[in-house]
Image 1: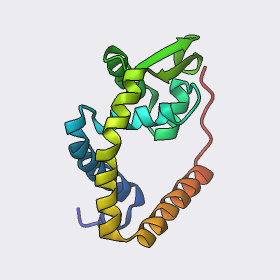
Image 2: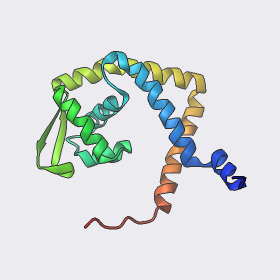
Image 3: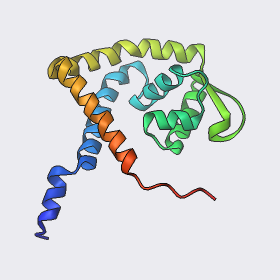
Length: 155
């Protein structure tokens, strides 16, 4: 197909580029965290849970940009490992999550690895460029949310 629009999508689609970049970053951080026994997703989940007071699954999923099924699947693994406990109601909005002592120890042990990989990227790019990039990503997210079609109510 010789349609120039196809080439334009390949070169300028914000969604395509951010998705590809996110995949590269996930692999990069995950490789650094592997020695801690946590995957990048597990580390992110532990950080999201530790950063809030008893968040539910839906709040964690929203904070991380994951769908709830991804969060639930990974939480089951973290619960089996003794890092996370859920308390209270049922379902994605009822259960409240908290780190166990083992979960807090796991995240503490992984922070040095996270700091090393994050610091290396910041040093390569420069602190100001990183701040600008983060501001851009926040603005991009806000623009996408503002222009998104309203979701149909669940029945």
